[in-house]
Image: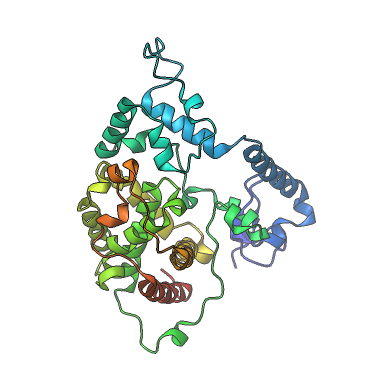
Length: 348
């Protein structure tokens, strides 16, 4: 056994992680919280708690974020040389004060004609993504931050997906041996997952229907059970599907970033468990599908009224050739569970 990679605190197990404060190698959360490592441990949790308090102290963070986005869209900033001479143009803070910013129709009705025209131009040109707040997906976060998740806090408050641990054995799910293409089919599934999280700038849970329908239609393995013979072909298939959709125009140039994301997920640097990020991604897809299934059960049969905003920006899922219903969700959940089981027992 290589003593250079042993856990510094129990000295009996191979280390899996490195303390971000002192650089000490350790194997588990128990060793990380060891009494001889108490100073670093307390400082780490203190910083985590302070970060959470900083977020909670922000007065209506969601509203402030929306206001900031709208200001960037319409050029209201401190660098403006002069105020508008148009008396009808009042400060956007005043106009949107007290209204529900989650109601697109209401927000749209409070914008001027020129603002609406500018917004439509940004959406159709794809430039809308340039004024959104910078987003860092979970797979780009330092792995040590997941220690907080391991303690068992509410998974909805975590930056990391909730990892599914009760994974059944592959032999229980199927008597047949997995296809040689399974690893590339997995790539074809995770690629649109990564793309859509980037596309929705981390707000994909607010667009759950669009996200799930996009995931299904952009992955030929999910929607058509197509098999892939290599990593490059599996990724290229998703890229070609993205190019077919007008709604993704302007975002296609960011596919280099998607390739970097995939490299991070499929080689996350944890030698003791190199499939960990893959299992996190599959767990997240499974959890999102479950949320979507429950949401579909609760949807009212009443047709949503088509206001001016909905007519100008129709539901994105309407652009997909196949829509995901409850029956398809059940099949997809079983498929994700199969992939999870295979990844859990494999060394990619």
